[in-house]
Amino acid sequence: MARFIPAAQRAFVSAASKTLTNGSQSRTASAYSLLQFHPYATSQIHKSPFTANIIRILSNEIEYQHDYAPPHQPATSFNSFTVQDRPGEKWMTMRGKYGEYEEIKIEATMFDGCVFVPKPGEDSTGENVVLHISLLVDISKGQGYPDMEFLCSAWPDHLEIQKVYLLNRDKTIINPYMGRDLRRKKNRKLQRTLGDYLEERGVNNELCVFLHEYMMNKDRIELIQWLGNVKSIVQK
Figure 1: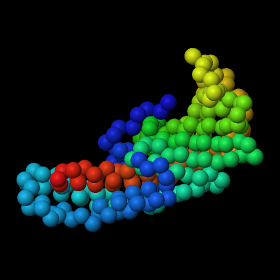
Figure 2 (figure 1 turned 60 degrees about the vertical axis):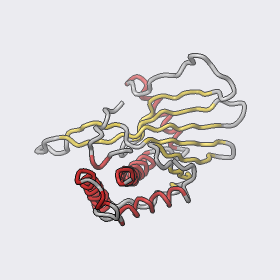
Figure 3 (figure 1 turned 90 degrees about the vertical axis):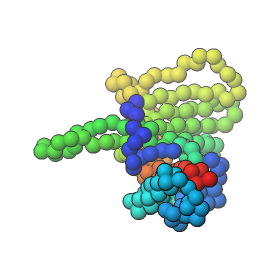
Figure 4 (figure 1 turned 135 degrees about the vertical axis):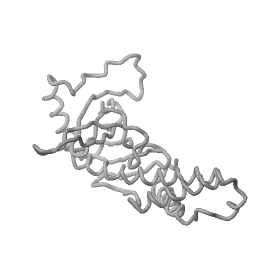
């Protein structure tokens, strides 16, 4: 699995409503409204110089984040999937169907790791950071069949299946067999075959591109909201 991203990376700092349409819109609007606070708000005159300085720094950071890469409203759909944001959490959920009976549920993390790769070109020096998203894809065929759960890595341009679990929702099995690690070289053929299975259901490289764009925007929304919450507490 990819290495952990240091929390200090400004662009990708990750900091809870069950519906997207109202909760997400109000939350994004709230993030925007944080910019309306001025560094020296009412009652700040009664704060100590140290507290006033913290409030000023937080206000400047909120304005910087908005000016650097202003967030936009999160998408509510992608291809045949509905998209449900989870405000204040490091997850989002997508749901879709395949055929008449199959239900597909996707849960994706915010950026949870990275790898470093050499910059392209013979004369290039240094490394590029390639961000990682963890993905759980549940495929349910209805009662009487175990669910298939795919543990995947979503890279910026491709999907990688790590493991496939069979989950019986009606029966708890102690220490079940959890399948092979599909990242091993000898399992690449099986990985490609299962990748085709997911591709047919819309879980593919195009989805990875969407998820990376979505999570970059979610990172900005969550960060601005978090900064505003910290500022509000300091101002009390």
